Image (tube, helix red, strand yellow):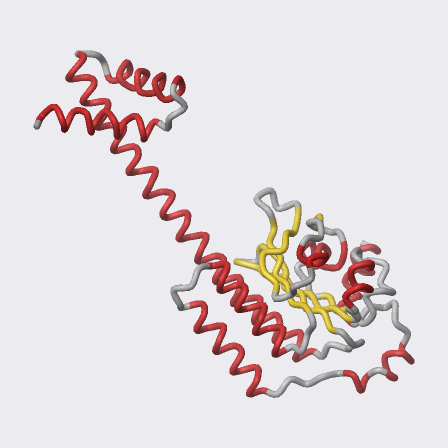
Length: 261
């Protein structure tokens, strides 16, 4: 529990920075004009309802977010299938070192802790943060401060959204809310895409079953064999010739149709 408390406390601009230093740098807090925020959110909403591919929408989201948050780098990271690592899915950065950095384990680094605890974390000085992992990249790219918020769907974390500044910056509550709102919209896009993909996969599976059933019927009729024997013949030919059962079934149906003509 002590470790959890220490990690989450970084959300209040990291306990690593003393109170005097925070007061001294309060002037660095940037308040984003409301009209810029509204315009950015509108652009993101338009992208969500557009015909763009998922990768293009996410790239647009990080680009707009970087502009409105005045950040040097904005990146969106998603959990892998095993939900063990965070992988960069989109960024507007052109830094090869940043783009190609290794995936983060859940609980590792700042973004990993955001994914683990499902809480935003803001760091005033990432170089001095004991939890920030890629300090060599931060030094090379001139990254100073960081804000990371979770992407979640129905309470479950699916990734994180990060922004980095080129000057030390104390993120305000409103900025954390803005980035969290963007993260929520990005999560909706990703979840909708996942549902569409799952629906298409289910449709494809159903269609494949129908095709195989028809092919079995043809073999049963043509060869006077049982349904089980017909299935095994399709399966064996599929394995022996490294073809999918759908391909074999399609070929059987095509051959049968051509014979009829």
